[in-house]
Amino acid sequence: MQLTVVRRLAVAALLVGLLIGGAVGWAASGDDTTNAAATPAPIVGGGRAGTQAAKPATAGEGTEDRSPTTAAAGATADEDLENVLARALNKGVSSATKRYDGTVEAAILADGWSTPVVRATSAGRTGVAHESSRRTRMWSMSKAVTAVALLERVPYGALAEPVKQAMTRALTASENCPQRRIVLELQRRYDGPGGAQEAVRKVLADAGADPTGVDVAATPPDDPDCQRALTDGSLGWNENPRAAALQLGTAEWTIGDAARFAHHLAAGGYTPRGAGKRVLQLLRLAKARSTEGDPSGF
Image 1 (cartoon, helix red, strand yellow):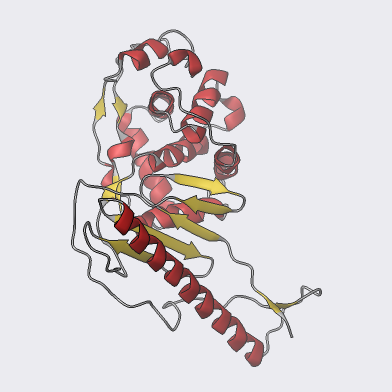
Image 2: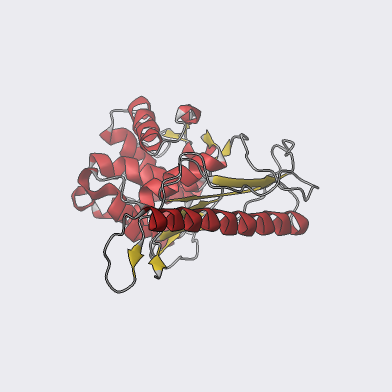
């Protein structure tokens, strides 16, 4: 009997999050801001605590087989998947540590797992740690979180065209001035920075991620080009060019929480007003070259 196991995988790193097809793509990230020690640990075996066995189906029939023998085979397949992915992450983070100066962290989460598989290294070390409690800034992955929070409040079709364009640039080119425009819109829709923070916390909490690292400041833009873009109509914002916006890229989470958010998004977890579906559609677009420093390209 041939068994078919279908998995939705979420792989995350702390600087870049790209969604490709039905899975979340990944890029390893170096960070020289903190070099927390990582304790080498062996590859995890024996399946995750609380893991649910995949529902197997006979090939070509698509029918569920609930026999004990088949269930055991499904559990074995689940454990094999975990070990294969853990070994791949081990190899990836170890290789990245040899090539780049900094700390590398990676995590992966599959359907039915209670917790992500996490691998991390420290600067100057090649040993692989199993878990990482190290908190790191969300940086550009905050753009996807912000977009979800806004679209849970306002459906995409109800946004002004410049706001839609800014969201596309923020998610496909990782540009910061369009991201500021989205944060300003988030603050407007949620009655200020405090309400916007609560909206972002809810997005993280809904994914099972720790939302406590979103206590960040709202500051004016420090880029003159961005100030001009916010007032020349290209970003659809004609109010105070130095309006303060939450610096959500400086919010903090762990690599495991990044994987939880990515998996929840990929699994269709953000359903209000079609928020998650729309963000996935935008993230699947071809990546664009950043035009930062050239407001005419926004």
